[in-house]
Length: 64
Image 1 (spheres, helix red, strand yellow):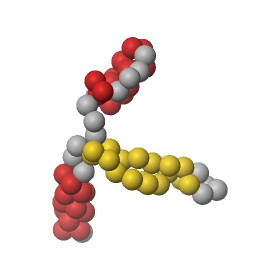
Image 2: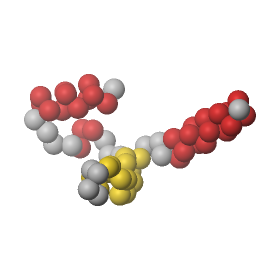
Image 3: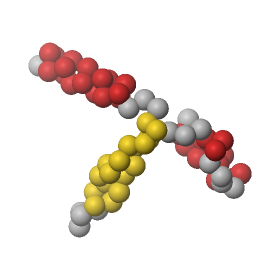
């Protein structure tokens, strides 16, 4: 059983490494309102995003 858990852990780590620096974009789908990944894009620098100062601070706290 430990071998299976180790294999899954390695697969998750590999998948996360493949998506470093990328941003997943999700959309609510279906009548059960489940979130589905619809695309992946290269993340852009935070200073290129135009937001009110309060919104920006809140988002930075949320992602760090």
